Image 1 (tube, helix red, strand yellow):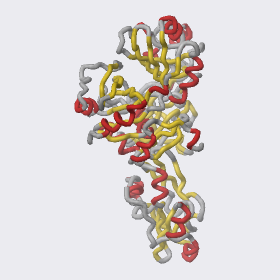
Image 2: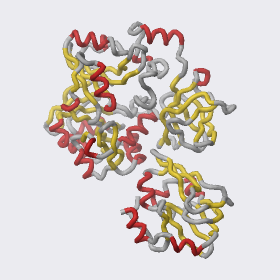
Image 3: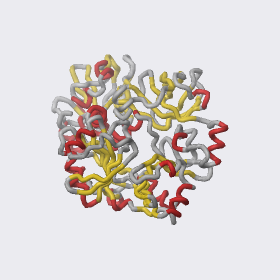
Image 4: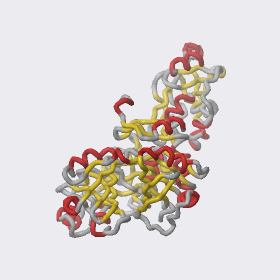
Amino acid sequence: MADASYPDDRRYHEAHDWVLVDGDTATFGITWHAQDALGDIVYYAPPEVGATLRAGDPYGELESVKAVSDVISPADGEVLEVNDSVVGSPESVNDDPYSAWLVRVKLSDPAAVDALLDSAAYQALIS
Amino acid sequence: MPDVELRRSPLDAVHDALGARMVPFAGWRMPLQYDGIIAEHMAVRERAGLFDVSHMGQLSVDGAADIAALQQHLSNDLSRITSAGEAQYSLLLNDAAGIEDDLIVYRIAADELLLVVNAANASHDAALLDGIAVDVSDRWAMFALQGPLALDVLASLGIDIADLPAFRFRAVTIAGHDCTLATTGYTGERGCELLVPVAAAVDVWNAVLADARVTPCGLGARDTLRLEACYPLHGNDIDAAIDPIAAGLGFAAPTGMHPSVDAIRAAGPARRLVPVHVDGRGIPRAGSRVLDEAGAQIGEVSSGTMSPVLRAGIALAWVHPDHASPETPLAIDVRGTAVPAHVTRRPFVPGSLR
């Protein structure tokens, strides 16, 4: 497992998710803190491609050896793509939570992402 | 639950120094994991793991009259272990043949027994056996060394148990301290459990862990390992309302010991505890409904996890006897999805013990 880190290139949701914007699309994932709390992740139940995501609502499930956790959407949008490599190798979320994105999303309002936490504010939240 | 109310293992500071994630368990502050449950689980299956199980309780029974009285409460036949150094798996039963606890009996001497009981039940058992058994849990730390290389690790410490059969125990010296080594365990692997005087706990732990082949393992791996081995956990899979026959523990309740057990054996249990292998994607959890092929509920999961070895969901589940035979197809309701599964045979994973 990598050491704790919270890259500056993305924004963070208080439910321990990150969003990395690229134009009007974005990838979503969970933070180092979230994967550490879950422990060994063994299962990812993704949403359907085309599903509508709403900020603050669950869109999928990550399951560790000991527990199940909903994954919370950090923004509104529509699922364009599911990361099948995470479906096949869920432990990649533990190995590198910032490469192991969970969904690629067409954002309803890319500007709304700016209102989420930056790295420093998220680290303050979890400290 | 605040930490101040929890009992602490003699190794509490050692666990913190090892970076363990500590959790409340049965009134104790114990390590859930160090580096990760799967890595620790695989270390035990492939090499050797060392567990702190100092939360386990010990009760002493001294004298022929108290041993005779104890027998009335136990499922197994104490006359099968007559020699000092012999041990036996047994069940503490109530009048209705319900399992109040499961435990291991050690024949210390002709007129002296030691019972090793579940942490969560230690005070309950002592109360049930008031006047017969004395709680001596404070005297001992307890470790388990388990895995295919466990005997090699012991040999490096100058201890040869290659000729000691399962369920025996004897005195050993580790790091200059007198300990009791028993060929028992809860993982399906070769190895031992060690009763260690509290004052020697840190020395003995460090002496065993100094071997590079040994990985410290927490309660998380202990649970996934025992589930792969199909050992029931009291409080999860079995309890005071469940009898030995239904639980598949009839081997520890021989005929002629308890009329209530014999009656259940003759009539057949109303439900059975069976191992279930999940064939689709999804992980069964305690409380998950078990369904027949038509979707009707026929049982309930009592323990479930992802098997690190099989990389599939596995469970112990209570089902109607009509659905208890190996290869019976069924399904597990995993949060609203019926995931295909089937009844299999014990154990899920044959460890080095078998």
